Amino acid sequence: MRLFSYRDQSNKKSIGVLCKKDSNEFVDLCATDTSIPADLGSLIAMDPELAIAKKALANPNAIIRNLSDIQFDILIDRPGKIVCMGLNYADHAKEGGNARPEYPSFFMRVPSSLAAHGAPLIRPQVSDKLDYEAELAFVVGKRARNLNRQNALDCIAGYSIFNDGSMRDYQRKTTQWTIGKNFDQTGGFGPWLVTPDELPKGAHGLQIQSRLNGAVMQNANTKDFLWDVAETIVLITECMTLEPGDVVITGTPAGVGYARTPPVFMKPGDICEIEIENIGILRNSIEDQG
Image (cartoon, rainbow, N blue to C red; front, side, top):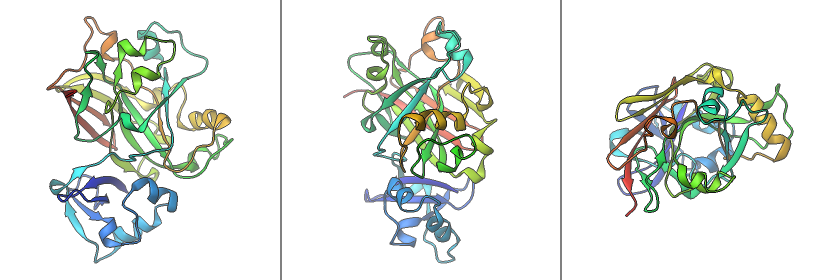
């Protein structure tokens, strides 16, 4: 299934699920079954297997709507945790002057840094160094602690796409990356939550690409991860409990703007697209902070 969060023309929040891949038609889950909450994070917490969504999708009397009539909302708008990885591709570590790491760099994002598919990413007043980063994201469906490689993937509700928009000058003001990764509305997230049954195990072997105004900037494959999805979950759950609705961002490949000669940063009027094979395309325009 491909689930998403949206608002209708009256600004009412709901959850949709595409009738089929690449379709413009979707089932309005909340209208079809009024027991379904209007928040995708709440639905995952209530029903991690998403059985109630599958039932609504198969309902012959399901309420069908069209994507042209809605506005995408942030996929999981208030996740309890957004855990991000850095330096998870050897080529990206190298382009930044870093040796192949022995352990991934982890940092956190906050919910106010997120932006929906189709919404603008905001370049703040204090910096013009807004960079793109194409990343695979996954959403946790079940409480998880001290998992191993054999059971790690069982906790995943689905996969999505993330653009880890980064203010590079602020990222380097301290030895911690957090401040440069958490400007308001800089992290594109969506459009779909794709359930694991529609993808290779652990989302392995998927092409991942970023495009800025149509020009390919990053082009890689999730098989090139230094730490794959299962290993990532094992490392995180050694430390903390992952809970339903938590989001994990798995790192970006080479080709980011700051490492180019000359550097390339996103500016107002630009369109940035992140595409991951069999998941979809996340598209955001760039605007200056008002």
